[in-house]
Length: 150
Image (cartoon, rainbow, N blue to C red):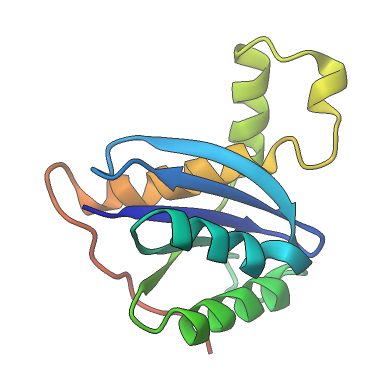
């Protein structure tokens, strides 16, 4: 069995998360500079069997692009080019940062730690990954979602 890697892409930082090999548990891994993301992913894919990637993308009601859309589109294109044998899933990331902030508070993380840049990103990536798994339904294997990139 192989794992999925989840990404919460930003212009400066990207949160990275992973499932276990059975795709039952999503865990935040770390936050990396977006410029260093592909090198980090190479390290992960060299160390573990990876089935594909799940990238969060904001879906505005009006269908318009957000400030982060160009960064996300570039990462998706790079993933498809670099890993042609792997599936790239795109999942709505709406409100994952707010959910991640709530999780930090509920877990008792100190306010000083919560204020650190990037402290939410890996947690948000794990939430994006969990949304993808939830959409697959219990006991199903991962299936590619429609590619909404243009």
